[in-house]
Amino acid sequence: MSEPHDDVDEAILDAALERILQVGIRRSSLEDVARRAGVSRVTIHRRFGGKDHLVEAVLGRETRRMLAEVTTIATTASGVDAQIEETILYVLLQTRMHRMVTELLRVAPEEVLGFYTVQGERQVRMGIDYIVDMLAHARELGLIDNYDIEPVAELVARLAHSLMLTPHGGVVDFTDPAAARQFVRTTVVPLMKHGIATAAKEPTDDRHHTTDSHPAS
Image (cartoon, rainbow, N blue to C red; front, side):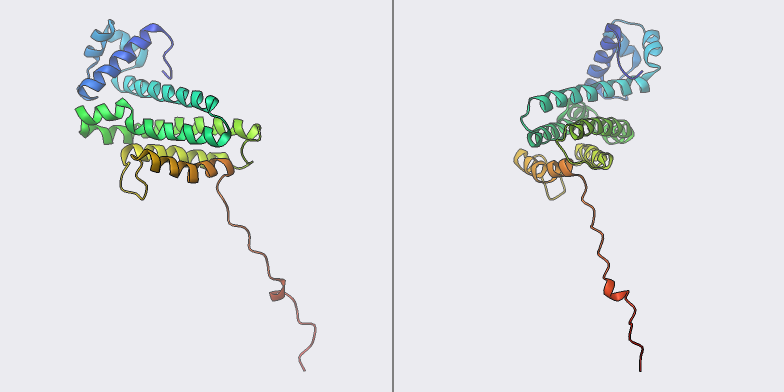
């Protein structure tokens, strides 16, 4: 199931999220979730197909909520530079500071790397699709250059996912808001406005290809 479609689904997802944040994924049972949601275990199986799919649905909902906030930020910021800067900063912050990251690190740190490595493929794909749509709309409006947007979308989505797991260790300290903003402003904003620069084709020097018209004596 890709998205919740009624109040029962929402109650199950809420209960699953809260239980995961309390004890981690491995120790969260469907019985616990069912009891908290006021439904039967069979209902969860019928609607989500088991624990793994339920966890995927929880993560998917949280990702969609974050992207909805990104849309709100993009519509309120003034000018395309500010829209890119504020939305990317929000994404980079949320991928590190969202409670599904911070609370899992607190209650079940041994689960975090494996979980976000396995689930990362789905998160990255959702991020790429969202960024592609956003950039395509901006391109239609003439706000950004006409370039191939998919490689840029993938770079930005993978940057966010990488920073969730390893925010330290590079030249830029992404836990420092000023440093993160400077990086986004000087690197990500130009990238998303103009695309990936490609090396210009070197001009051919015709002098090396001309035939000497004077025969040797």
